[in-house]
Image (tube, rainbow, N blue to C red; front, side):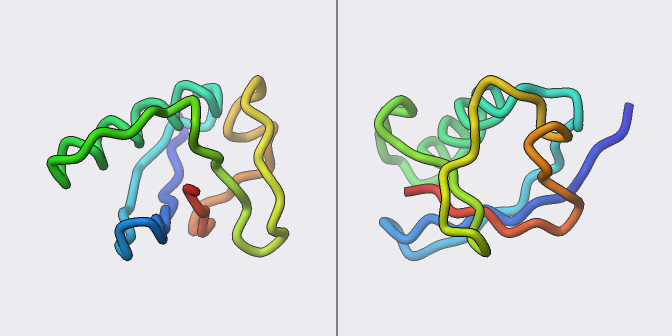
Amino acid sequence: MDKINVEVIVPAINDKFEFLLPVVMKVNVAKQLMVGIIANAQGLSFDSDELMLCYIEKGEEIKLNVSIEEAGIKDGSKLLLV
C-alpha cells in the first residue's frame, strides 16, 4: 500500500503535525483520525465535523468523499485544518 507524508498546520493551537496516510484512504476518514490524534495529543476536544481540511496553496477546502490520491494530495503536501 502506498503512503504519503503530509504536514497539517492547525492555526487554532499554533502547531503543526506530520501524518503518514495511505493514498487509498478517504479524506473524511483521514480528517477524523487526524483530528482525534491532534485532540488527544493536545488534551483538547474538537468536533471533526466543524473543522475544514484545506489545501494551503490553493486556500480551498478539500473534498471529503474522495481518496487522498483522488483529492490530489501528494507526498510532502502542506494542509490546513481550520
